[in-house]
Image 1: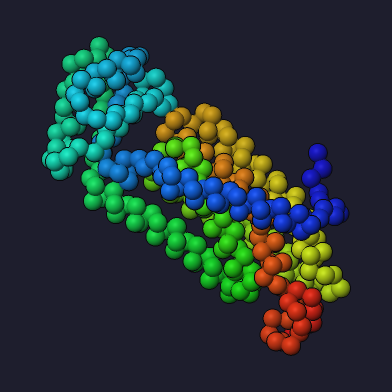
Image 2 (image 1 turned 60 degrees about the vertical axis):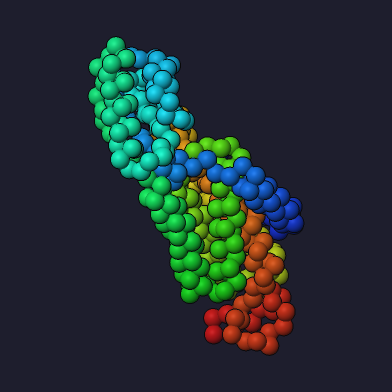
Length: 316
């Protein structure tokens, strides 16, 4: 299969309005779903107790759920991961402070030891209080904002402000749509999802920089091309690299999603969605933003005419 698009002449900029409209609708939908449904925060962010157990023999999850429901501890989530003997138990935050949370762990252990026919090995227990969960939300938000700001500065120094603003707007687009899909699907939003979003930011930025670097190179090489033709040429020249990178990344992520177990399903789902959205934005959104902002060869000469139409000597 030939994925070399360098000799093709696909006019992406002719349909940039469609891309803008589609992205605008998706962003509006994400914002509406955020305020309507909100994020389904996991124990990392809303507090609670997590217990990871291993049973020596196969145990029906319904048996564990029935045993724990007798304790009246509120919302309890039970799921298998890895094998049928590996079970993850999440219990909602209990009122009464940290001491009550620790007591919940002992109560659950005693209940499982008495009611289950199979011996239980307690691999891990975690108790997250409301103060810690609040700090984690702030830290996660700060990490994403800092990453986006640092990349804004990097692109600004490497290219020019039009490139910097275009790349960051494409990043914000990807982050908003990722958060939006979690609001719509109500998948659990926890710390691994923050890690996934940060990875998406890096992946999307890398894709965009590849295209922008080719744009800068073509601004020097093709002095007679108008800006929309030059942007189309740059996208076509980097398209095979973008598609091949995305396909190979998606193959690895799909394997993790199918065979990796339920513990990393949220992370891999976010990554799969992020790779798809990042590829879309680097092709249809980032360069279209450049077209709207106005990109020209001579950044220092203020008397070069309209941005994007006058190409003076970029190298001097």
